[in-house]
Length: 98
Image 1: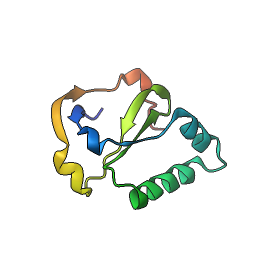
Image 2 (image 1 turned 45 degrees about the horizontal axis):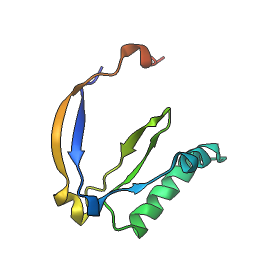
Image 3 (image 1 turned 90 degrees about the vertical axis):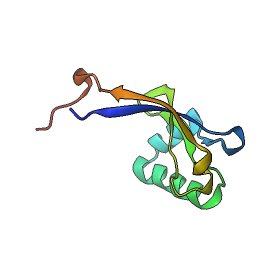
């Protein structure tokens, strides 16, 4: 199983991410083509927002939040790594390849 890194970052308040609500995520996932709906929202965000990333609920765990960073955004220089640690998924959560 690959070794991953759990990373805590600091984003300045004035560069805070655009928030995607649980309702909006549910609407994306309920659409006839959820992958296309999510990609279209991401493309729209990249073209229209001045913020370095959208933040939204994790699909299988809506209490958790994901932050997607646009590394090409000029405000990325203001984002700092606060801490990081090795992270492994519980092997019981991984479906083996067939």
